[in-house]
Length: 412
Ligand SMILES: [Mg+2]
Image 1 (cartoon, rainbow, N blue to C red):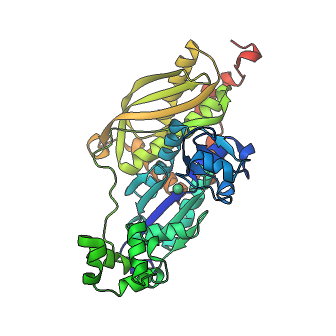
Image 2 (tube, rainbow, N blue to C red; image 1 turned 60 degrees about the vertical axis):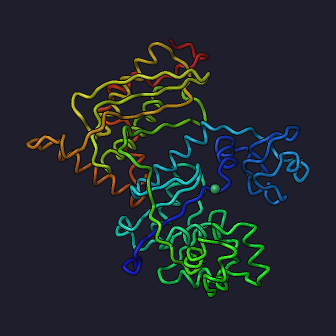
Image 3 (cartoon, protein in one colour; image 1 turned 180 degrees about the horizontal axis):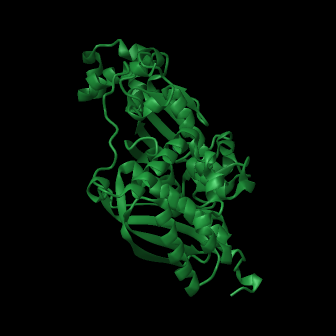
């Protein structure tokens, strides 16, 4: 089945992203009409609306005042760009764990080329299900996916079953899939072109696909041939990740409740380091140093950086330095923590850095790679609980810090 697929392109689009992001950190809002953007009394517009609000006819780009008239009981929230960008980065990294060919086209939307990664899955649909599950487990957000042999068909497919959609258009079925759809479903056919097509009795992409380019030139000009090809399901545009070599790799997380226990902090650092190590190994990179970022509940943000004894891609080495740095920062100020970030820099190619005659690092590396594969096939859940337990090598670091240190508890 996979062999018929020349390319496997996935379009991934987070559902009602800003609104879902707010509900994620305020679960009490779940099931309610939530509107992110302008306030009802102001002149702003709706940036995103939960599906509950959409049921009242609210949609993005509508004025907040109009949204308020349609749905007076809606909860209006201002946007939080930093928080959305952080979630977006995590979304991108989840996608990048399936293929290095990820192109973010907006904060909540990406194309992913799975043509080469697809072999480890029974079918492109199975791969898409794994991605969907991973995004839900790891991020707590729902993503709609379209899978096809081209960007355009994947994009249209991801939109059809929203929210929580998953639509696979089998290789060879593109034209048949597109034919019954209204012309305005196709990206690039805006309201003006739609109106003109309708005037000429052309309602569906199938009807459009049968026309000759000459007939379409008055409407689309030079794009006529391209539009026709797209309507027939032909679209060779590649997925193009942002160019240039990566200068750093890392993960950060804002917590739903502030962390006050060192054991929680170390556990989170372990998780962040594990993800970071996995990113390094997948890219064949080693890091020369690690930076820790720590944001207190009052938003004071501090950071500290340290070099490794020698370049590494091992999450254990990353976490041990990260924990060291955390202790040093917390020695200067102990207060509940809102965000933690681990980032490795001074990246170098594994091929250059790997010493030739060292057996142990190689064996460790193979073990790490095997675990990475396990995670990619089955999701984090399969190894996470065990990994996050204090282990022999970590116990001595973790043990003395089991007591909470938030202000009210009287620990210094
Ligand atoms: Mg979206």
